Length: 119
Ligand code: 5GP
Image (cartoon, rainbow, N blue to C red):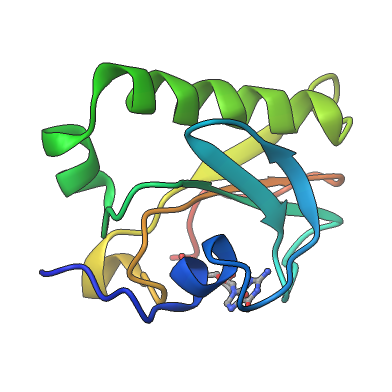
């Protein structure tokens, strides 16, 4: 799938839509989800134009890939979920339930999160 530069996370990266930033570095931006599913719900995204985990891990540089996963850990520490535990999730494509076509990793925490998936 070609990258759509008008997706909502691209607009956030360009500053066209506001967000509540948790962390930012050269390659990543992390911000609170607008519709949180847990007391802590942060979305971590690469700054580059990647639709999903598939094209990201196929075409991004090693530095970008390392930065994204390090940013996830940084977000867990900054939001205080590291000790009690947390969950990371990346939806991919239609069956994965991906709504925004810019790769993002959700970080959830702040309460026991229950089963991994609804049956
Ligand atoms: P997906 O279903 O694609 O994995 O997750 C997309 C997420 O983006 C959803 O949790 C949704 O609440 C969040 N989201 C959609 N639009 C916005 C927005 O404008 N701002 C923020 N902060 N989050 C958004």
